[in-house]
Length: 254
Image (cartoon, rainbow, N blue to C red):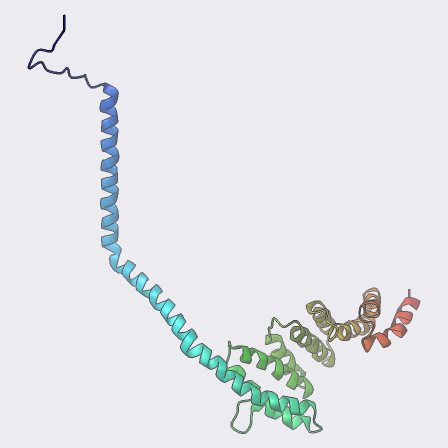
């Protein structure tokens, strides 16, 4: 016999468990917390929106100002500085190869014919590559003029990624200290010049100077090593022809 459901019979309703009620309550609490947090955030933003807007504007203006400075002030200034430096450097090169070097070194420092000298370039184009290079050239000019204090001052301001120029600047500071009777400082700068570059152009020169000055300061072992390094690493240098006597002298002192 077939069975059938009576018309109008209602489906049974399952009873709701206590755990389900607790879960729904917890979910409601979470949403209430989220609503509360969102409301507090909105209130915070509303309270400080003027400060937030100001901060965004300041950042935007800073970026735009930097880009504007870079493109419309710094770059043209950098190019202009190179043009000014070329004339001062021209006087410097003339001085190096001239019998009347003092007047030409002074002109390189102070300018002439309506063009800036190294000192003007340092003052007016600070922060540019030409301005930095002017420190080196000014220092070397003062060194040639025997103004050793100014030579040290300007050469010490010079910073460069060029290892040869960096070594020459440090070595020149050593020369200036030697001239004003500060041999310990001179020795330290000769060593710094050696460490800055191991090229054939500058390394043997300052190895020899550090060796000679070091031996005068009682640093005989280190001085001997410097002379031997010239002999082994730079046998074709002019200094290599001078070290045999110094090596023999220091070895006899042992």
